Amino acid sequence: MMCMTMEPLTIISGAQTGADIAALDAALAAGIPCGGWVPDQRNNEAGPIPSHYPVQPLPGAGYKQRMVKNIEDSDATAIVYFSDLEGGTENTLVQCLRLKKRYKLIDASEVPPDCAAIALARFVHQHTIHRLNIAGPRASKQPDAYRYTYEMVTSLIGARSRAEP
Image (cartoon, rainbow, N blue to C red):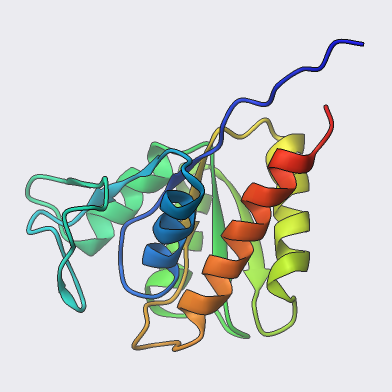
């Protein structure tokens, strides 16, 4: 029997504190491709984004423009939120709808990270997604966003590596 290998998943993110940076950290820890667009000054709410993150400054752009570019450059976006969509997380959904791009909503207040990863793995497989944008609240808005997203993305990567074709 011949085994087919899955094309590696690339994680895309805007490197904001919280959910975004957690997605990049999980990808880097697993050794899978990652990247994304960040504001022109290469900053997030904590200050300069460290150079070990493989992200690119978008000339002349702020947070909204880099968010739109990451949605455009991805096959789909996973949107992590806690009970209510608000702020930049809500705007991510609005932009996905405007751009007619696939998205998966993940209510972190209702779904444990490992269960979210299973649902996300199915979504990625069903829609043949190779570049997945991960978006969610920044750390100042939701202190649990980093931990939740890191666990979810780590589980997603593990589920894909164990999946049979």
